[in-house]
Image 1 (cartoon, rainbow, N blue to C red):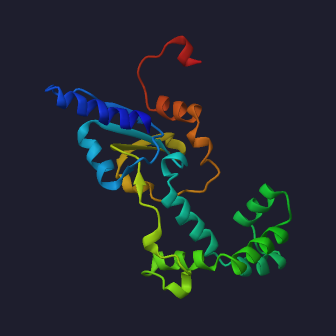
Image 2 (tube, one colour):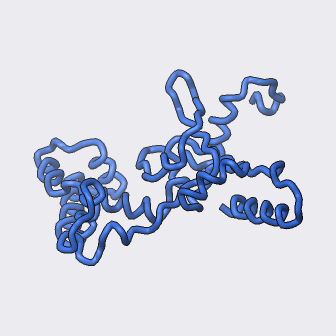
Image 3 (cartoon, rainbow, N blue to C red):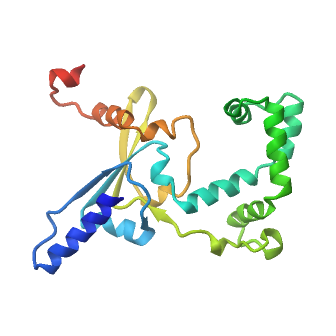
Length: 215
C-alpha cells in the first residue's frame, strides 16, 4: 500500500516539475486493498500492476469485505446445522471449525447457533439485505447497507495467479472488483507467504536458470 501511494505521490511530483511520468512504473505483489474502485481501475493506465495469488486473504482484507463475511457467516442456519450435527450428518466446514476450536462438532454448532440467535440478528438482516435490496430498520436495528465501509480494491492492472491442477499455475488479467469477497479456504493464509508467490511465479518462467535457482 505504501509503494502504491508513494508511486502516485512521485508521479504527481514529476508532473509538477514538467517532466513526463510515463516511464515511472509500480509493481506490487499481494497488494492490499488501498484505493476506491474508481481510482483502483484508473491506476492501471498510470502504470501500476498488482499480482495476486489464488485465495490470498490480504488483497481482500478490507473493512467492507470483513463486514460482508461476518454478515454471511451469521446468516447461516446455525440452528439447523446444530440439529444436523446432533444427528451426525454435518461434516466439512463444521468439522473444520470444531477442530480449530478443539471442541466437538456438536459443541461448536451449538455455540454458533446460540450466538446467531441471541445478539447478532442485525447482521443476519444485513446479509439478507445485500442479496435482495436494503433491509428494513426493524430487521437490522440501526444498521443499513449504507453504513457499510466503502469498497476498497487492490489497484492497477491485476494479474491473478492460480493453481490449475496438472497444469501447475496459470496467470490471467482480471478486473479489480474480483476481490470484493474474502475466500475462506485452506490456503488463504499460506497464499500470502513469499514462498507461495515464488513457487507460482517461477513455475511460469521457462527460461534459463542459475544452479541455485534450479535447486
